[in-house]
Length: 335
View (cartoon, rainbow, N blue to C red):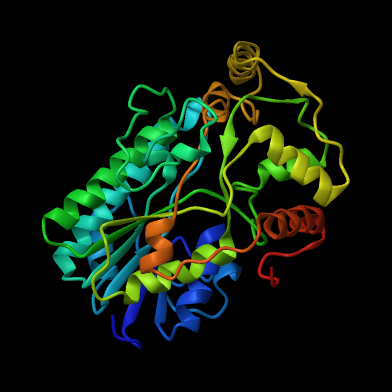
């Protein structure tokens, strides 16, 4: 895409979106943010111009894309609460389909589309040597987690739009950490660790990636003359949850949980918490997700997008520092 052409960015007020907005501006793009109400100026977007539009109102998206050369879609909704099932599909699946259809109608030249590695698949065992790549066969169709199913539906919509002729590049980040997570979207795990609220570890694995490393990959995907359909954006290490907690112990000084929690016990607790405590962080879905090994390989993105990642311990230290500083900060302050 030509530098200086208008780029419409969704999700600019979110954890990843704020960093992507900054990276796009640094790359020379004129960023316009999508907001729900005309004249709305959330403090998270700073002085960036905005245009009104709503993922659940398709007609508003076509109007918002008038004069826009490209769209970077980062907006989404994250929840593992059973009560949010309908909203997960409305925003992450139907809303994404609305955006893709509007982009095709508006004649947008490129869409950089945020998916998730939860839409790619996972491993049942601790096998980092079998880390998943872009050609992995999706193996979570029977997983009872609405977030995963909604993201997979959106992922398939994006690839179908590309097959139909729209220039779509799908980016799938892993578990995003780093500074700037105002709503503790994914940093909730680090926050709970620092607060000593994690009694034990499930048998599962994770791949953390730094939000500051992800953001430049969006600009690279936007500017690439002939990008692949899909790139996994994974961090430098695949490690078990227990190993992650030991690394967090080193960064924070907080002792890691000593005990392992059997999946059946955690699942029972999650089902009970869902019924008794509507806002509980522990749900059956979080247990199902935490019992899998989310191991991924970003070789393609490293090779074609110049994607690079900092050492994991730097990311974990930044995340620990962030959750400790967060109570004293005001939205809009520099991360």
